[in-house]
Length: 574
Image 1 (cartoon, helix red, strand yellow):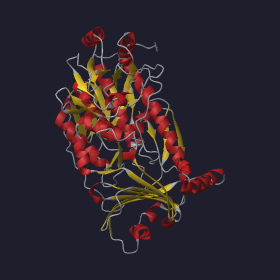
Image 2 (cartoon, rainbow, N blue to C red):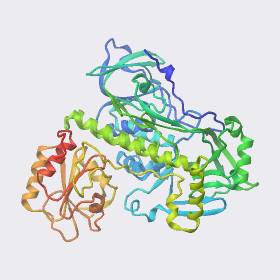
Image 3 (cartoon, rainbow, N blue to C red):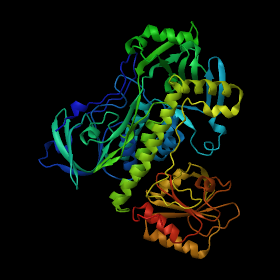
Image 4 (spheres, helix red, strand yellow):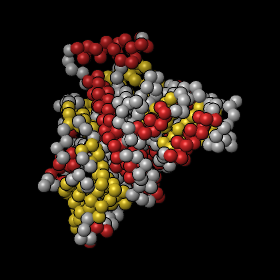
C-alpha cells in the first residue's frame, strides 16, 4: 500500500529566508487507540490541520458533533516559513463570527476597503468597497488582512474551548482503505502506530494530498511559467493602508507588484519575476533590499520578516466526494493567489459540509443530503479556477493577441471608466452562488442558492441582532423567515412545520406590522428582507450556512417540499 512519505506535503515554496514567524507549539498526546487491540470507530475523522480542516472541526464542535482531527505537525501555518494566505473576505469573516473567533481576528488584523491600481506612474482606477452595495450592509467589513497562521491558531483555541473535537498533533496518516460501511486509517505517531475507523473522512491535507493520490482521484491541472517573490517586511515609515497593485511597475522592470498591510505592521509585497528567474538569487537579502529601495526610495529602512519565491498552478478535481472521503480546500482545487480565492473557498467548503454532516449524524436529514456538497462546492471550485486563470493570463499575457488586449485595456481605462472592468489584477473572492444544487429549490424569481449577508435587525425587545444570531439560535436547524403580515392560518401551518421537522420559524416585521408570532423580529430598514431577496409577505428558507435554500410567496406545499429537499428527502425539482 502507498505510504504517506511517498506523497509528502510541500508548501509549494521553493526557498525561504528571513527571520520567520513565531508559531505556537502543541504537545503530542498519546491517542487512546494506541494501546487498544481493536480500532475505535469515529463518526468523522479530519486529516489535515490547515485552515479548511480546522474550520470544519470548529464548525462541528459548535454543532456538538464529535470528531477527530489528525495533523502530522505540531503547529499551525508552515513551521519556520511563511505567512501564506493573508486576505479574508466578508463571507469568511461572517463564518468566523458565527464560530466565535471574529473578534480575535478583528483585533489582530487590518481592515481595508480602498484599492488602487497603477500602470507605470499612472493610477488607472481606484475603488472603495464600503461604497458598494454588496458589502456595506453586513456586520463584518469587506476584508481583513491577517496572516493565515493567526486564523488557524484562533481556530485551535476555539475548538479547545468548545470541546467535542479531539485534536491530535504529530499524527501522520500512513495508510488508508475503505468499504461500503466505513474507512480504516493507519496513523503513525512518535509513540508508535495505531488504526482507527471512520464513518466519514475529510481530506484537508492540501495541494499534495496523499489521499487524493491513493484514491486515484482524477483532476485537471494547468501550470504556467509565471514566477513571483514575496517580501514580508516592516517599515520605519508606513505606506498608505490600502491595497495597491501595479500592472506594470517601473521599479520592477515593468512587471506586476502587489502591496498589502497585514497584522503586526508587516507589509506583504509581491513582485512578479522574470519567467526564468533563479529562486535562490531573487530571495537573497541584498537583492530583496535593492528591490525595495527601487520601490520606496534609497533611504527606506525595513526589517525583512520573511522572503519566499513561488510558482503557482491551477488544479480542480472532477468530484469532491469519493466513497466515504470528502475533499476540501486545496485537496480539491488549487488556484493562483490573485483575488484571495484559495483559503477563503476552503473556509466555505468547511462551512458547507459541516452543517450537512451534523444534520445527517444527528438524524435530522437523510444521508442523500451529503451529495449536495459536491453539487455546490465543485461548482464553486470550477468558478474560482476559471476566474483566477483569467487573471493569470492578464498578468502574464502570451505574445500577440493577449498582450495587445492588455495594452489596449490599460490605455482605455486611464481615460474611460467603462474600460476599468477590463483591468484584471484579481477579481476579489465573493460568496459563490449555487445554481445547480439538489438541496435548493429553484423557481422563477427565486433567490435559491444565494448567500445571505450578516445584516442587522431589532429583536422584539428593541435590542440589536444580526442574521448570525438567528442561525446560532436555530442550533443547526433550518430557518424559515416569514415577512410582513401573515394570516392566522398561514402561521398555524408554520407552527406545525416547526413541530414536525428540524425547522425554526420567525416572523420578520416592519415598523407598522403587528406581531402574530411569539418569535418575531423587527426589520425597520428592510435590510433583512433585501438580504433574503424575499417577495412581499413571502418567506425565505435559510440554511445553517447562511445560504438560501428557497424563497416563496405563501406558506404552502412549496415550502414543505423545499424543506424536504434541504434535508435530502426529495430528489425532484417539484
